[in-house]
Length: 250
Image 1: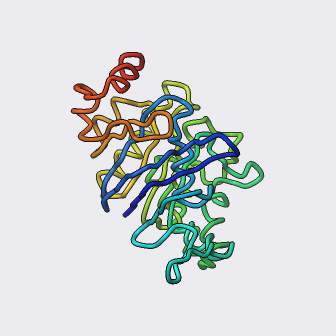
Image 2: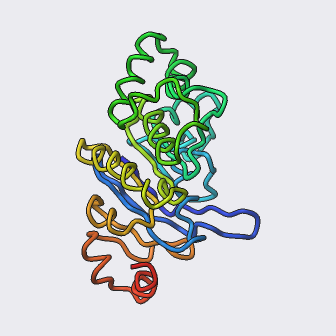
Image 3: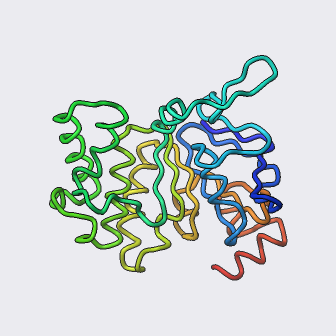
């Protein structure tokens, strides 16, 4: 579903990604772990072209992200083409990013209505189904400021799912939540994993990564230091840098 080959990204002289090679199979849950500043979130944002890569190649479902190839040259897609591809990739941010002036229902239907031009009636029916799925059927008319952080994050997940994505990206989805609210969000993500959704999750929840992840990738300094089976990486890491990191967070 996702293939990264030698992906580089820099901001001026600051090189954030220094040649990332990763493959994510269809239906797989890949958990990205590592210290702050290691490049995890930047890599996630490159997957849906919120950030443009400076080198290498990145593809989703067999198609280059943000570019088309003609002969030996790459051409960046136009904005509307990028948006069309991005609509196939759901993303859940650390800070929810809900529209504060819109109800929960309108937040969830905005994408299908504006981007996919879906009928209003079916979009609202789908939104209600998704709210029920994330345990918030009674919040259809509420506004974001009337919800807890955990509830807002579950609405954000429902909003992403409303676009029927082939891939879900989660950028530290629980790090802004009070500890007692984390469980409800992780339960929704567990359900998605059980249903076969392909997911890439930047997370500090090591127990969740061990339980739900198919692969754990440890990043540091813009490179992949270690990757493999969650139990192996988290309990018997082979690299000293991985061992040092886990000793501080576990």
